[in-house]
Structures are given as C-alpha cells and as structure tokens.
Image 1 (cartoon, one colour):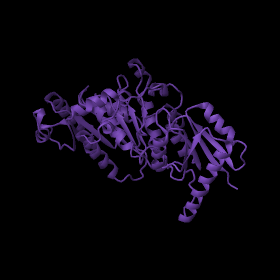
Image 2 (tube, helix red, strand yellow; image 1 turned 45 degrees about the vertical axis):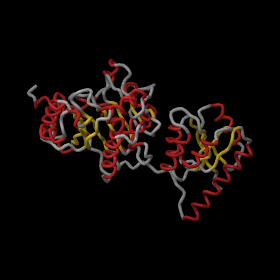
Image 3 (spheres, rainbow, N blue to C red; image 1 turned 120 degrees about the horizontal axis):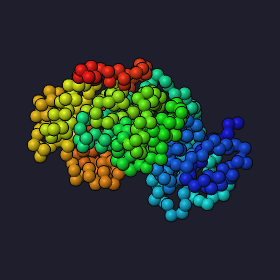
Image 4 (cartoon, one colour; image 1 turned 90 degrees about the vertical axis):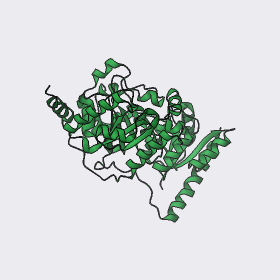
Length: 412
C-alpha cells in the first residue's frame, strides 16, 4: 500500500520537529521533507511531488497563502493543508480561495493531524480517479526545452533600465505560470535587490568562488521574491566584481536555461565582455531609450554598434517615460533613431518614485497605472510567442568573440 507523502512547511524549526514527531509512528504516512520558507516549499514540492503539504500561514519571504497559490498552479496534484492559530479566520478564507484543501488549528493532536491528512488524501484520490487522472510523478527536466534569455541594455544610466527589467520579471513571475530568473549583471553597482527590497546574503560573486556551477548548487544562491521571481544578486561591493569571469557567467546561463521559462539579464550600461556575452546569448534584447536628446544620441550610437555586431534582428526598442510633456513625441524618436519603437512606458513619476522608495515593483504597487499597463503589454507579447523546444545555443567563447568584433569595429 502506498504511503501518503508529506512535506512540512513552517519557519519555526521546533514546530516542524513537533509535527514530524506526531507523524513518525504512522505506518501509512511518510514525511519526505521540511521547508522553512514558502519559496523553499515551492522548490521542494516541484522536485519531490508530495501528496500533502502542511503549510504555515505566516512565514518570511513568501507567506503560506502566496505559496499555496503558486503550488496550485505549478504542482496541481499536491494538496495543501493550512496550519494556523486561532484568530486567523480571514487568512484561512484567503488560503482556501488560493487552493488549500483543508486547515487545522494549532495546537493540534496527533490524531487530529493524521485524520485530516487521511481525509484530504482520500477525497483528492477519489476525485482524480473519477476524472481519470493519473498520479503526478516527478519528471526529469527536459534538457531540450531551453528558457528564453532576455537582456536589458542601455548606453546611459538613469533611463530606467533596471526598473523595467525588475518590473517585467515580476509581472511574468506573479502569474504563477512561468518560472522566471532575474540575473543582475551590473557586477559593480547592481540595484536589482534594492528595487525588490531583497537583502542578499550570497551573491553571484560567492557563487563564482564556490567551486561548482552546476544548477544543483546554483539554486542555493538564488533569492526568492514574494511574486515567485527568483533572483541572482550582484556582488555586494564593487571590488568583488573581479571575482566573476565571463566564462563563469556563460556557464551559469547555460546551466539555468533548462530550469526557467524566462531568464532576464540586467546588464551594465556599456559594451564590455560580460554584457556582450549576455547580448550574444539573448533571444531578445530590450534596448531602453530615454526621452531626452543626450539619451537619444547615445541610443543611436548604440544601435550603430549593435548593427555591426549583428544584433539588430533581435532588438526591441522600449521608449521609457514617454509623453508629450517631455517635448518629444514617439514619431520624433523613431525619425531620429531610424528604427521603430516597439513599446513605450508612459511617464508616471507620481507612481514610480513612491514604489521605488519602498522597494515595491510598480506593477504591484499600482497595477492600474499607465506604466504598469505598458509592462503588461510587453509581458503579453512575450508569453504569446510560442516557446518551441530548441537546442542550447553554441556559445563557446561568445562573449570574447563579441568583444573582439567590438574592438575591430572601432579599430582598437
């Protein structure tokens, strides 16, 4: 007889241990793992596929309700039982709407816990049998299915590149349908974690020095935002950038591709080896243009350089902070740059600045704003494109080759 597999999720180690002790003598129940955060619960559930997840409501980095919502989308055959304390009835209602099958109030006895687990498992098993569904089994990762690498680039700081990269990443991730990784490749002064109000304990520099760049090791260096977005942070100090090589970035990008639908790279605002590697490997390059003459001058120079590097066919131009109050219109920009503007993000400073200062992406802080609608349109365009299985690109020494092409282009 199959034993019911259970994953225990609670941020307090003593609580997890107590729950495990209550279940360890049950012959028909097996505890297959423990998690201390919602994001860890997602990762373990996707790899272990437990029958039941015992989920606490209040946890750091991602609460139980959001984790339950994402589990319902990503691991639908996994049933969540919410663990709560008295006085959390409003939370429990939200949890049930998010997809939880049952709840149990702390403190509970061993018989209460086991009977709840058995009841939920039996109901869900009968439901799957009636619908003719097969039990969900862990599947090996499809190495032929490669996520899209999307690189954000600008030739001038202050045009909103990082803001757009982080908000697009959050917009894609919070639907729960896509696995999204945001990599901060501005290795000296990256601000991705500031925009997301994340405190990195380990960064890409620590990963580079860890001795292993296999995905099984990389995932322990990833931060998880409450939207479900995963982040590989830039080094915490400028001098640590020297610890990361272009070869290591190349290997990291190759390793993560099979595990994510979208890998978004926020690059440094200049043509150097790591940014060129990111642009080479990208399926899509979002070039950010500002609505002022100096920014447009630099964008035009950037386009001329990218033409020489054969990037033009994968560039989408985003006009940020657009609006008549800027003194220029979209057609003026297109005429000056001799290229079509693919997307524009309307000027909306009253919304964006408070969101930035609080570390909340504006697509969450003010989802009805014009800027948020602009991001939503970009996300819709990306997700409507069919993702066909494709082989990993051959990228041996691509960053250095691009750098050589760049030097040749300018006679350096």
